[in-house]
Structure formats: C-alpha cells, structure tokens
Image (tube, rainbow, N blue to C red):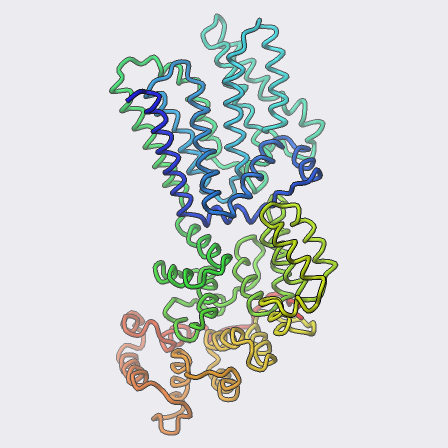
Length: 598
C-alpha cells in the first residue's frame, strides 16, 4: 500500500471511530447544544468578536448548533479532531509512518477532554488554527528583521481571533527559529518570555481590563466555567507543542519498525489513559436520561432504567416521569429504587443541571408558572452567560399557554435568528395570531385547560397537595397529576391520606383496575387495623394477598434484616415503607422557600 493511501486510511478509521463513539453518546452533544444559542445577527457576531478568541468562539458555537442532530454533531466532532491531527502532522518536515501515528496523540487527548461537558468547541478549533498558522508562517521566505515584525503582527492578531491558544503558535515558531542557532537557547527563552507577556501588555491593560490575568493567559472562552482551567487543557497544549517541535527529530529515526511500534504504543496508551481519566459513567447516565426526556422518548427512558437501575434522584425523576407518561407509574414505580419524595420531584437547587428534570415534570403536569421559572433560572445560570434554545423554546410555550404573547414575542424574535429553532418559532408566532389556534393545539390547548388559573405561593414540603389540587380541579382529565399525587403520598408514607383520597377520587379518573402498587398500599394500610381482609372495599389480586402474608411472615422472622426481604419483596411498596419508616416518623417540614404557581 502506498504511504499516502495508508495515511488516508488511518485518518479515515480514526474519523469513523470518533463518529461512531459520539453518535452512540449523543447525550453529550445534546447537553452541549442546550447551553448555547448561535444567532445569525450582526449584534451576536459583534459581541463574540469584542473579546479575545472571538473567531474561535464564533466558529465553535456555529458548529455546536449542529449537535442538536446526533449524526451532524458526531460528524462535526470527527472533522474537528481529524483536523487537529492533520494540523500536528503538517508541522513534520519529513513525512513517514511513525510521525503520522504520533500526530494522533494530541487529537486523542482532545477527544477525551471533550467528554468534560464544560469544554467548549472553541478550544480545539483555536489549537488547530494556531498549528496551521504556525505551519504556514514557517514556510515564509524572508529576512530575519521582516520575519520578526511579521511574527509580532500575526501573533497579536491571532491572539485576538483565537485567544490564548495562539501562544502555541508563538512557542512553536520561536523554538524552531532559535533551537539550533548559536546562543539560540538564550534568545529562545527571551522571545518566549516576550511572547507570553505581550498579550497582557497590549490587551490586558486596554480592551480586556475586566478579565483576570489568569483568563488572559489561559483563555477566556475555552471552558464554560470562568476562571477554571483544567489540567487536561494544559496536557493537550503541551502534547501539541512537544510533538510539533519534536516531530522533526522523530522523522529522522531510521529504525522504521521499532519507531512505528513505539509511536503506536504512545498513541494508544495516551488515548486510553486520558479516556479512563475523563469518562464519568455517572455523568453519562444523567446526560442520557436528560437526552431521552428532552426528546420525549418515554419507552427508551424506561428501557434504559431497566438496564442501569438508577439510584440518584435526577435519573429517578426522569424514570418516574416516563412511567407516568406511559401510564405505568402505579404499576412499576417500585421496580426501581426510590430514595424519597425527591425521586419523584426534587427540591430546587441552584445549579444548571439538577433542575432540568424538575422543569420537565412541572411542564408535563401543567404547573406552567413553575416550569417557566425553572427554565428561566436554568438559562440565567449558564456559567458563561450564554442563552439556550431549549430553555427559551420552553419559556415561549409557557408564556403562550398563559396568554402572555408580548413577552413570548421577545423570545420568538431571538429564536427566529437561529438555524434549528427558526421554523418552530415561526409556527409559534403564527399560532399566537389566533386564540382558537392555541386552544386547539394538541399540547398547548390541553395545558391551558389543566393549568392553575389563580396565582398563589406553595412550599416544596407540601408538593403533594399541589399535585392533588391540580388533579382534582381537572374533573378527571389530568390523569398524570393524579398519578403523581398518589405516588407522592406513597413516597411520603401518608397511607391514611392515600386511602382517603383514593376512596372518593379514583372513579373520577375512570380507573378500570387498581394499580399494583396502589393495591399493595391499600392492602398494607388495611392490615394495620384489621386481622383479615373481610370487609375490604376493593378487589385484590389473590396472588397479592398471598404475597403480603408471605412478606409479613418474613418480616416477623427477620425484622431488622432488610437484605432478607429484598430479593423477594424489594419491588413492593411494603419493602419501601418499612425501610423508610424511620424517615416518615422523624420527617420534619422542608425549609425551602416558597414558590409561585398559577
């Protein structure tokens, strides 16, 4: 095989591997996309280019918007990473197999670094462009004085366009200039020092005075959280620098077989090690649940929960919402571990991830004000002060449902300037022209009928009462709220309230048969005050009463040994109730602030 064909095959295999990986992990792409909103407007472009690194940031956000489509997003990541690999290889003065293999190392490190959800695409773009400019600059044939002046001008322009990653350009050029010259080490160190402080001297005391010196030296828009510069960022830059200057020496190695083996080992080990360090399975699980809920893939949520058996409240909220949407909450809720009421709907937390599931729950239940507030807070809590197409779209829906068309228009005008939200925004704008269109809308019309009509304050510690009012005021139409009301009572151990409400309200929701977990709770509550099921007002499955008696015997034999009950009864309400009994007895009122609804 010709070397050129071998190089193409290696890059193609790498591109396909990256593409497949990110396609199978589309949740990471979705998470990134929902925390930025690229707009086709001069104001948006001016805002990006007014800060150092504006070009990299602008291009990065333009490409990130394609993450909303998994195939397109995976293709974008693959192209960016292959571009970085080719940029490193472009600096090799002599092209051979082992230098080509080594050129994959920075790209592999970058690939694993992108698993950090706060790493922005502007960083790999800035690194790649810095390497390409360095490669082009080193090919310029001119006198030393002209090159020095040209270097300073290009470097300052590059810093403003690409940010701190342009220092990679300066470092590579300076080292290549002076490394082999007489007194070269001293001149090299002097130029490296000047190159490092030059951006701060020129821009730090003028256009970037509001930024900390650390941001000027390390990059302003490479990481979503300001003033945080992960070690992995420096590892990527260092690997790109060392390989870009050391690839010259690697190209001269004549022991081809050993050099290829050594280069392959370095590339493989660096890729695997960085992946192990950066891949967080717990984080991936949370992102996966959020991605499936965002796309209303309810059966996929349940199937995924069956596989991973979640235990954190975020994942359990998504699972319980999917069960409720499928009409299975009363049948399968305790097939999954439940912590407490927070597994059904969590309390408000000040971060930009935890409330994602809660916001979705409130919207689907019809608590429109709470859904709007949560989505607004999620957008405003984005760490780098960007906007979100996902949250803005949900806020528009909430405002339309609440008849607040003027406020909705403000967000619609923003969404109309985007690529992937424009068509939806135009349809929403057209719908607002007629009340009948909104009322007849399959989702908005239903939410408008079922929502709270009056404003009032409520406390999270009594969230089950909100579900109850929402369900009962609908005259049996809001079955989702009824299921959540029953589930909340069960999770809080309020068996007496559950039995009382169930007695007079179940028929309102046209419940043909009693859900399994509801049967378990009603039967369990009955046994607390009766010796037999004589006079029991509901029809129970014969197998359920037999199972309850078996559980009672097992509990009497091993009252303190939960592990003895779990294998056979771990998916029953009885197991949940008895393992949380102390929590019910000592549960004090939640101290969270009041929230507005209506």
